[in-house]
Amino acid sequence: MSKGKQPDEKAVIAEVIRNNIMWALTKDVAMQESTMAHDEDLFYFWTGSTHVVSGWEEHAKSFETWMDPRFKAVRTEVRDLVIHLSRSGDVAWYSATLDDVVSWDGKVGRFGEGLRWTGVLEKRDGRWVIVQMHASLAVDKVREIVLKETQAAT
Image (cartoon, rainbow, N blue to C red; front, side):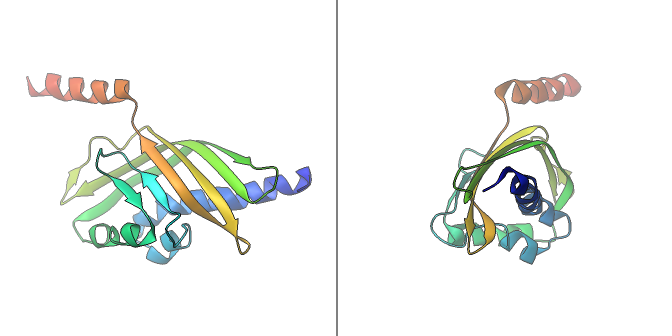
């Protein structure tokens, strides 16, 4: 792949990455579905200790929660997105800082800001799809949130 093609390819990849998380603002399921591998290759760890997804079928079960009227995406922002392309041009990986603030039944989650978000995409049949992701919150940020809540409660 020539260097001249990389910025265009990276722009396409960036759109896939953003659509993967931004879909929740409008609950555009088709947008979210278009961003991920629909097979057993899909894998991700999300922020909860038990939030491990292996395969498209397992991921698709999450839609029941996301489409529930009690779930609402409050604010989503992708910052500091860095994308790398493999020499072969059919694999890409990224890192970003993510704010993924959601509410359930009107109660806003505490741990959705400043997530460290990484992932891997593969170009399949001319389309980029996410095959692996990981989101985590740095322990110092968790400590900061808990200390603020403790001080506010006293």
